[in-house]
Image (cartoon, rainbow, N blue to C red; front, top):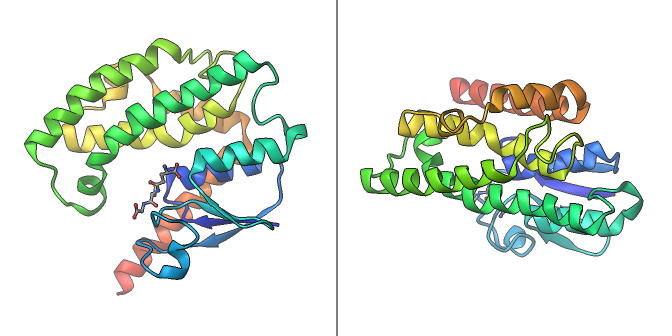
Length: 221
Ligand SMILES: N[C@@H](CCC(=O)N[C@@H](CS)C(=O)NCC(=O)O)C(=O)O
C-alpha cells in the first residue's frame, strides 16, 4: 500500500492526500516532523520537503510528480480528463497557480507562521509579482463553480489547498487579501468544494485536528 509521508499542515501534502481520497486509492499516512535533517529521510526526499510517498518500487517526492505517477498507475481512476487538451488545461491551471502564485506568496509564510519578519523590500516585490500573477490566474480560472467550469478536476484540488493560504498570508503580511481584492471569492469557493466533496471535509478536519494537537503541545511545553 502507498505510504504518504508529511503533515496535515502542508498544502502540498493535502493536495496528494485529496487526490488519493477522491479517487479511493488505498494509502496510509505517516506523520513527518519538519525540518527534515537526517540523511536517511533526505535520501527519500532530497530537498527535505513533504509530501513524499513510498511505493513498492521506491520513494517519490514533489506533489505534482506524485499526482502524475498516480494518474499513470491508476488510469481507470481518471485523475485527469480523458481529452488531451482538457487534461493539459487542468495542468496549466495547476502550474500557473502553484508556480506563479503560491510559490511567490510562500516568501511571506514565515512571518505569518513563526513571526520571522519579511523585509519591506521583499514585501513590495512579492506584492508587485502577485498583482500580475493573480490577474493571470484569474484570466484562466472560471469558478463556474469549479476552476475549469462545471466539472470538478484536479485543478480544483490544487486550488482548494492553495487559495486559502494565499488569501490568509497576503492579508496577514501585506494587510490585504490579494485574492479577494482581485475578485476571487476563495471562501465561497472552498465552501462549494467542501459541500460536494467528502475528501475536502476530511482534509479540513485533519488539518484542524493537527493544529489543535500542536497548540496543546505548545501549551503543555
Ligand atoms: N514543490 C514541492 C513543494 C513542497 C513543499 O514546499 N513542502 C513544504 C511544506 S508545505 C516543506 O516540506 N517545507 C519544508 C522545507 O522546505 O524544509 C511539492 O510540490 O511537493
